Image 1: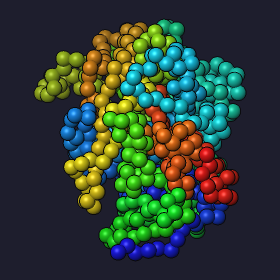
Image 2: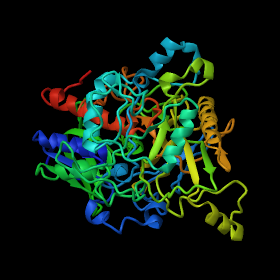
Image 3: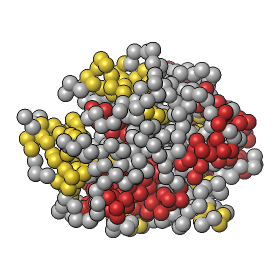
Length: 589
């Protein structure tokens, strides 16, 4: 029998970006808040103090900061007729865990969505006609607009300490930054950082083709900075240890750096770690939830009652907990009915080009997680979908993040895989290459979804979550379009040689090779409870005291990285909770 704890006003499941923001904001309002994190505690000191965290083997290759798949994993299949198998080695995406979640070790690339992406289906139908949408594509409008979210994008950028050059302030094109970005009310909190040699060469080549290169916006401090919560950041020293690492220099926007230290000042904010939430419990009235049941570090089953539950864990875990708790009708791809598990989507990130130069040295050890130049000339709202034969947008970029010897050794095609020839090639080409990437939208489809696996279970006897996903023709055409643009730019660079990785016709999804951790959907927001799990305020349609922020809310994936939009949506949700819901708890829509 579960041990029952004293009731809390708010229980938060997970303590990454979303959970940290909700915890601090509601604690400031005087509410008694408890956050439950399944992973370990992490603090800037001692966890990321120098030289402990600058360990490529431990963090970049052995993935010390990620979830251990022996604790929890998913099963994966490509089609409804396949048998799903467990994801036994981290590959395609990295499952976050621990205080700070993926926000502790991300690359800090912080983008806004284009306005059209929030009403994508309506935009496509009005602009190009409904007939261009494939029959099996299930794209939807989000139920919220860019104009509504803009103030919350602005505040999240201030909290995370984003540096960059604005391209469009209140409709005025500045001549700096991304000329195709949506309007913004303010400049970024800090100016952008310096552009290293690789970026300058990329910009020259792109401009020669008539494109509009700009530097990435990133939650990486370029100067001393104090955010709205009083948290202080110091300027980045380009150490090259961002992705997969905690920041040793107080420069990188993370929940620890920007939010949690402020939350800990409030006695009414508490969190516990190494505690696995098993399920969210329903109230007898059938309209609310009553709290959560979890396993504590001693293996005891605990029931924590609460007036409100915020499900703020990793996207996949949010969906899995909703399924385990029977909160909403599971999605059925055969009938296209149900909402929990619906519209899983990934990110188009298959495609790269590497240019090699005998007479150039890029000093790759000088880098950050967002030391990039990019083009948004092929954005969602700049492509003729009817002409090109696909829906979505793609960004082309040139990124120098690190010079780690085990992760940053691209070599020309034809180089031996081992032996003296391989060693010679490393000596010849280390630091003498420049890489281009692409980053594109991923649409949602009727047969891409999440459900509970009928065979495999976790250590608590609960079914694992099953992911059914494969690339569709739309994804492949978009990626091939991006690769053609990459090759244009590489040729303009005039290298001695280059490698090009292009997605092939009918190429299947490969779960073994890392692509991106931008997994989205499964508990999506929308305008209709028949095809969405959450309303426009990320409130569960059926249980009004349950809110579910995170990338799970995306009806399909954006062209750009998801975290900036996750932050904006979380502050949008928090405003609705503070200003509306808590005064009169009820369905907000």
